[in-house]
Amino acid sequence: MFELFVWLAGSVLAWLAADGRGRSRWWSLLSWIGVAFVLVLPSRRHDPAAPTPETHVRCPECRELVRMDAKRCKHCGNRLVPNSAKPDSPYTEVELVEKLMAAVRNDDQEGFNLLLAHGVPAEAVGRIIEYADLYGREYVKAAMMRGRVE
Image 1 (tube, helix red, strand yellow):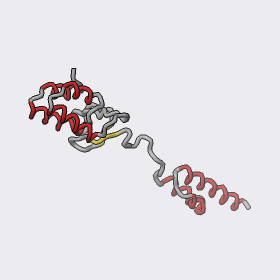
Image 2: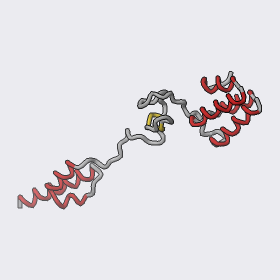
Image 3: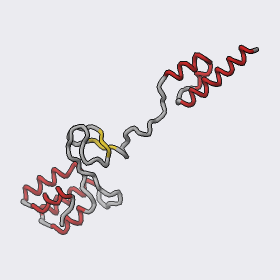
């Protein structure tokens, strides 16, 4: 009778340990051996500190994951330009870049200022600076380095 109680207690412990670690409850059939295996195996629960698209981005230089609010990449030291495109912006990133380039081409500083308020995708900053250099628009280059035009 005592052996049956010990086996039953071991089954319950294995079931609880397996459930707490995100493992199959079938380990409870193995009783005490199941308890040992479940405690040795790594947990399959989701790590809340793991990088997600909401918290991390890839560095454009070295392609390593860095926190979204970082100013420099911790892997290569590259200066990061935050992607400040607002979710309520009426433009997609592609449309916004096209409109910014059209404002540079047409020397429309006021239009450029208005579009710049929607945010510039980090991947497009270098391309817009090159485009402004092609047309000799120094105010655009200065604005992209500062993040705004005055």
